[in-house]
Image (cartoon, rainbow, N blue to C red; front, side):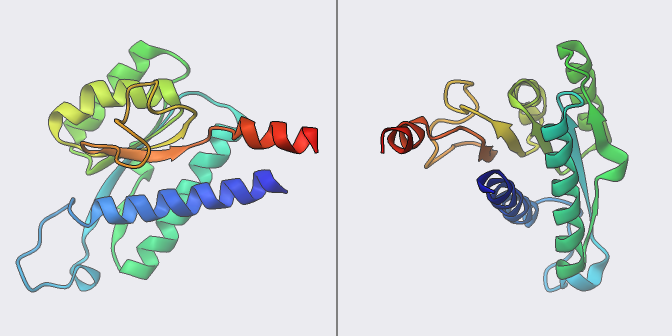
Length: 172
């Protein structure tokens, strides 16, 4: 049950982060225009490390929340053309990152630590924000400066377990 609640929280946090990050991205409209009526399209690159049940589920939930937010905001999040699977290979992930830069995506959502690290090394240099998912320790992975203030144009959701809480539960 807690795993389902965690995934719902992860999805909500990621969708909120994406929405906030994309308010400053995408096709620029003249001042005074309402994005909801402008037909604005945001290109969202989703990069999954590999096929895996939990990573696949995160990918589907991110896509579903982008669809919900698309309806709410009256904009289009085009992720269909920019969703990739790195197949667990860093050279493939590097090729995907270069392709996303070439495609001019507005934001990249890497799923899993290695995918986030490769995307950070390539797409951040181009000024493309990153919102990661399923990164257990973003500080040790050198993705963020701290959990409270990530710094730069990268943020996301950690899937780290609270081992202290688990140990307390086992002792009680």
